[in-house]
Amino acid sequence: MIHCLLLGATGVGKTRLGQAWAKQNDLGFVDLDQQLSQAYRYPHLAQALSQWGLPLFYQRSLEQIQSLDQSTQALIVAVGAGTQLAAQGALDLLNWRHLCLSAEAHWLWQQNQIYRQDPRSFDDFCAIEYHVWRQQIYQHSQMMLDVTGLSRQTVLAQALDLF
Image (tube, rainbow, N blue to C red; front, side):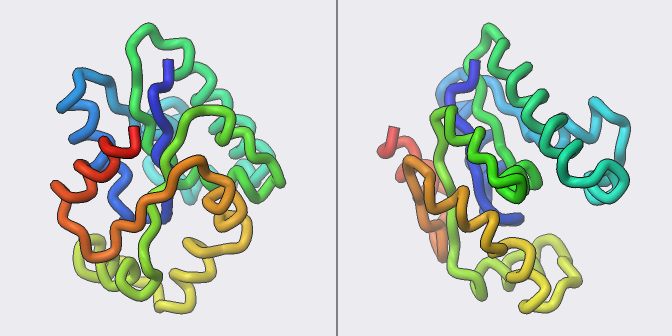
């Protein structure tokens, strides 16, 4: 069963928060991007997305989430590329309990440049990570947590306070 979906842009801290939250509360943790890569044997989801197209990507992402919801263990699920599901005009993810991590665009872009060696320009980064379709799903989230400039411990404490 899904305890909580963590939504947000690349590098916002979904995986770090999810792993820490799961460990602290004896929950399972799954990164949906990794789950999709393993299930369909794609080393990079961008490859899968370009080959499948958005409708099939949407379908397979949602199928993976639905299968995770059948687990007997409570799970924290980080949903990265899956937030592109909103591109289909579907807000299906919002049927599960969820928390959206957000951050100021320039700060997050800098974090991605430093820690992920993300080669995208600021404009390219924003065009994808802050696309109107993603903003649609983020704006409809039950709970939002702005992580701009916060330490990991502070983010974890604030996320736990929300629940």
